[in-house]
Amino acid sequence: HDAVAVNVANGNADAGGLSEVIFNHVVERGLIDPSKVKVLGYSGEYPQYPWAMRSNLSPELKTKVRDVFVGIDDPEVLRNFKAEAFAPITDADYDVIRKMGSLLGLDFATM
Image 1 (cartoon, one colour):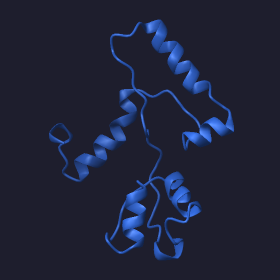
Image 2 (image 1 turned 90 degrees about the vertical axis):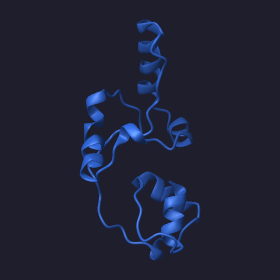
Image 3 (image 1 turned 120 degrees about the vertical axis):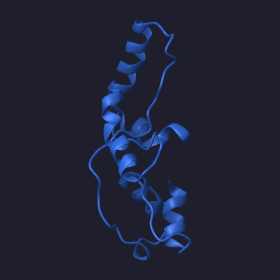
Image 4 (image 1 turned 45 degrees about the horizontal axis):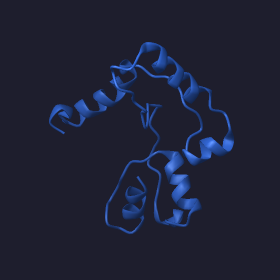
């Protein structure tokens, strides 16, 4: 995502999409001059950066791992992940991305 912001700011791309957290991060690190880009809009919330587990792990272990991630509230740890928090998600939470892909004519099965 850093590359998206850098390429738009440098004129190598006309537009790009990235999270506001990443945008703020590249500005803070001095990778882009915010006066060289314009925010066109904001999307609704959608799941980002999923952490996945093998399907054959025991349900108890999956629950423990999920609970540890969801329970992280140490600002330094979250900053290292470039995250504000972790939340459990379901497959249905990705329907917004599937819908967006469909509107763009993308076939996720072939990507």
